[in-house]
Amino acid sequence: MIVRAGNSARFTVNFEASPWPEVIWLKDGVPVSKKVTISNAEGTSQLLIPSAERTDTGIYTIIVKNIVGQETFSIEIRVTDEPKPPGPVELDENVPGTVTVSWTASPDEKRDDRLHYMVTKRDSVKRTWHTIADRVFNNKFTACNIMPGREYQFRVYAKNDMGSSKQSESTKWLIPAKKEKFTVKMPESKACDLRCPPKFLVPLKMHTAPQGYECYMTCAIKGDPTPHVTWLRNNISLNTNTNYFISNTCGVCSLLILRVGSKDTGEYKVAAENALGRAESSTKLTVRE
Image (cartoon, rainbow, N blue to C red):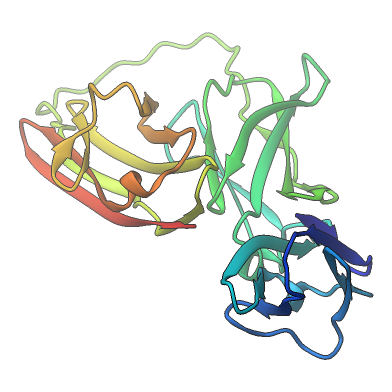
């Protein structure tokens, strides 16, 4: 049950019992606070939070018991609001043809574990905004296929169960196109070896995901020759597991779990390997029921 902060939260439970039972309400295993109003009538009990705050978020449990026995029922009430926008957006070119978009976290990120980000892009040719990334759970995204001679601009939005924030907008980004003709005479020199072993530019981030929701993991890797990337959970390869959606674009590697379950809990690892070496990055996924 999702409630906007400031609104009232009302939940009614119907039951049958004879003789008349004792009705107890708990929040996260302890009796509800005095601000919560409980109304009991024959065969029904109602919980009311007059003006819900974020601190009212939790698991609410009703216990109905008499001399014959008892029954319980629980519901999660989440109190949230439209998130505040992220901080300043910065652009950087780590790899030619790409732009790394980074931003300061929204002030609501720490108190809302479902908060994520959406990135949109506009260039001087198409002139319309379109989404290039959604459900981003960190504060960085690498945009590919950046063309010289075009002017780009990016917007970042914070999103949660209530909607999206106002945008945070980047400055304009332009890589000048070289139109002039010129001749280059290369001096004699020794061959330059640009090969390098795999290295993580952005490692994996710790994740805590609610059961039944999506989980999106991402990292960035460089290496020459292009490294072979393997995703593992508890040291078992996931590359051929159809329950996971794995992609690798311009060195940005991602794994998507559409519906997280308790079986997905564990250590996740990305192993990148080429002829010059091997690098690993690992994280843990905790599934909250």
